[in-house]
Length: 441
Image 1: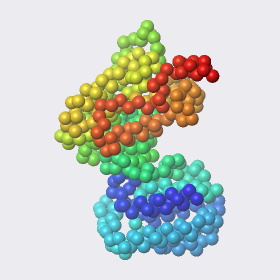
Image 2 (image 1 turned 120 degrees about the horizontal axis):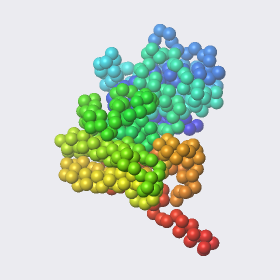
Image 3 (image 1 turned 90 degrees about the vertical axis):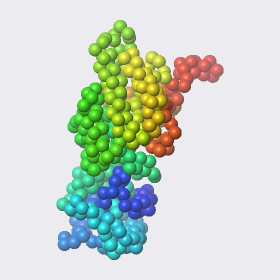
Image 4 (image 1 turned 60 degrees about the horizontal axis):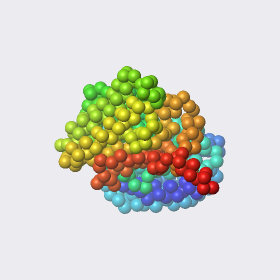
């Protein structure tokens, strides 16, 4: 069973005393199991099951006993015995390890070796979610609507993650490649920025989402994690004070800034002719795409230079390596971003700061599909038809994965590059290639 495999993996990893987002917020496995029972109750089979003690919270062995002794649980989860075995195993390990810590009433408390609870990482929640979803009567919609019976005892960060993880189709990365890092992502409320924010968080980074879409930004923050791990700030990247405030927020809240991802951008008017381009559109595009990127780099550098380290990233475009694929104002603005990347690489390299940019091919993001006036599915089909790399649908996650790589220590000696994420589209003349193949066939 896939759920059991994920659960075993989580049990193997979750004794590290850190939560999924790389911080030291500690939850409890018994709370997770309580929520697990709540999920089971969402199914019709479990609607009338009463396993929760009204007077006290059982320890791990208590939960294991309740699982193993209840036939109704076994009906829903066929491999209950395996779950019980894993719970008992981890309880025993926990009792042998002194010094587990938890947060209680805002202060840290060290627990003795006989404490029967253990540290919880949301990777365990994802595993439990996968396990529960294997039960035929438990649907994602029921999980999303669920309020656990012990919500008064459940930390708010845990409750919000239960809802998010119930609908998540992604598992925890095998390795937290950005653990302990602090990142600002401009344009992080939607599209590539939102996807990158979610992936950064899954890799252990603390995130500042900077955007002008306030409602979307707050919603993304709520989905991703807690106030300890993700923060939203209103930020118009063309306003110096707004960008400075985003950097100041990172410094005041987390004490450092490791990654500045200048992702915010606009396509401008979709007119590919020089006659159709006017000053107002050109200025608007350059204000956001170039001046906004410049401000992000400037204020990030002001705190990274004293630290003698940091990563500055930009989102450029396929239009920087393949002409004629975007309007003149947009192409010119992204060429400027590539030039800024290379110049900053030279200057800031002396301070241990790496500067790179990512040039995505066309993606079925809300920004582009709306700009072309197409439904996402229609636009996606068009992109797949034109793609060089067949059998793969280009997504914002492909760009986010590139950002994780460039932001992580895996790329510690990469600077000044323009990483093109286009499935090889820019490497060949598509029309000539098709013509050549047709003549030879």
